[in-house]
Amino acid sequence: MQTRQSEEALDHFHHNMISEFSKTLEMFSLNTTESQLFVILYLSDEPMTLDDMKNSLGKSKTAMSNSIRTLLDYNLVERVWKKGARKDLYQAEKDLFGQFMKAYVNRWLDAIDRQKSSLKQIEENIKSDELHSDQQTSAKLKEAIRFHDALEDVFNDINNNDF
Image (tube, rainbow, N blue to C red; front, side, top):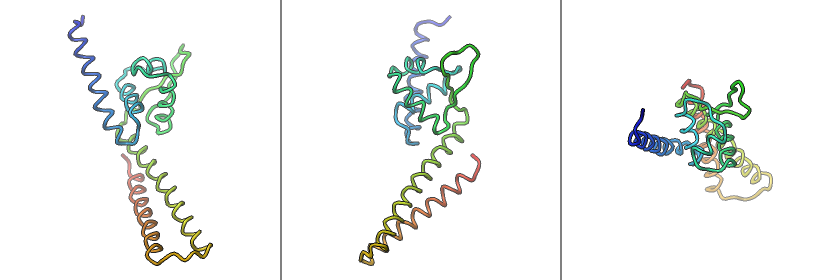
């Protein structure tokens, strides 16, 4: 039987683990709630419902729903089935490094693609509108496009390697 002091020590440890681990996950462009929710799911031995998550984090059910949706989109959590359960259950993917790297790299590739499209559209507008941009501006635009091409190559190389 655990004593009150050992329960408090365990709660303190649990709180610190969530706080510190979620700081690392925020570097992967997750917000604080998403990061904390992932850590709670990762530490849990059992899948959790939105109500369980709400109670664990002390946030609204809407916040939990939005956060779980983001984590699902990045394949960091999965919906699981449990016999007799009427509510959706979720659990964290256990391959932390692989899942986070895939999610992070794919976010970068999406952002790079959007930026390259925007820059190329600017380049096309300059050509089609016969705008007379100065040589320095045109050179900088081409350099920005090459920069994004190089970033895309690096992230594609990372993406093609197994984590």
